[in-house]
Amino acid sequence: MLHNMRTRKNPAILAVGASVFIILLVLSVAAGMADCTNDPNLYFPVPGTTFGDGEWVQAVTSPVCQGGTIIIKVTVGNSSCGASSPFYLNVYYDQYDAAHLIDTLYVDGLDGCNYVMHQFMWDTTAVSLGTHTILAWADPDNDVPELNEDDNQYEMPFAATINPYAPLIEATKTYSDVNGGDVNPDDTIDYTIVIRNDGCADQANNPGDEFVDSLPAGVTATGAVSASTGSIVLDGQTVRWNGEIPASGTVTITIVAKIDSDAVDGQEICNQGHVNWDSDGNATNDADEPTDDPSTPTDDDPTCLIVSVPTDPAVVGTIDAPTLSEWAQILLAILIGSSFAVMVVRRRRVEG
Image (cartoon, rainbow, N blue to C red; front, side, top):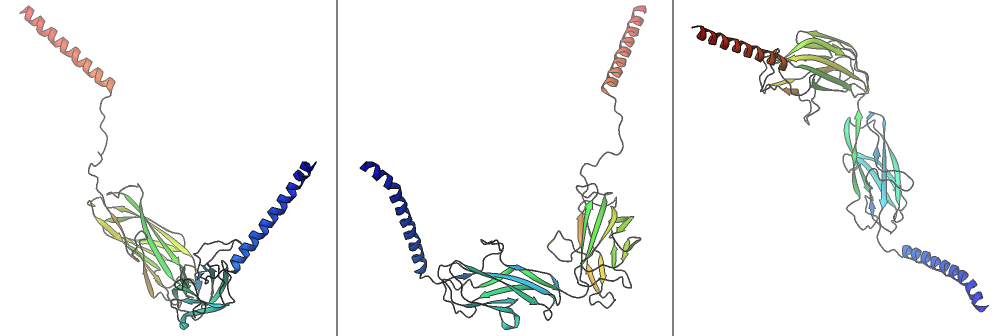
């Protein structure tokens, strides 16, 4: 009986013991956290980092038209167990100075292993056009003693682009060999020009040609030209296009040309078209944008190809060689003819 009573009490005793252990463990962890004597460490998590709530960090909405608002999302974390005192979070563009300060956020402290996220709204009305670097600075006044004071400044890998309320033209030109492979004499080449309006205003169909492309020596226009919008004509070796390009719109132009028959091996043929466009929106084309070869890192460079002449040129026409059965018939005819000739010679000898 006594043994049975002890057996029944064992589960209850074990349960109480486990509970006490868990309580002591929690109190120990809590005491350890409360006793953390480390300084805080403010830092900027890399873009794309996700937190437990699914939010992600560091972002810039761009491009915008001048006067528009760029949204800048900035996250500051505390990688230490020590809590930080209050600090400021500043965001700048291009330089860390008062003239380039976008906005300031007051952060009322940051617990250990925690983070704070904030969105800055940047009014670009008085900001110069072009591409700008976004900079963030946590605790710029060094009010918070930290484990590492060297990671409080951060340059975002996202640029902020501000476009004008006028056309802004970019153009590329590529080529492809219709037959594929190397470019040989007599090959047909498709030139493709893409004109893009990155500005915030339409490029109008102003007086004069909006695009001109004169084909170089070494290629000859086939007469086949086309454009996705507007009007296009071929004047000898010169292509002329007229039309408008809406803001954020594109126009694609195709020119079909043929490599000259007398092109030599290793000959370089370069070509570049020119877009005439209105940079200030006053209905006059005052700017020139040359086409760019997007396959090279150089901006606004011509599109070039190299002619390759095959070392073993293909045979023109076909040769009707006898088939195997035809060769057998020919051989048989030769044997029969030879046998007949031998018989004639022998007979003449006998008769003689």
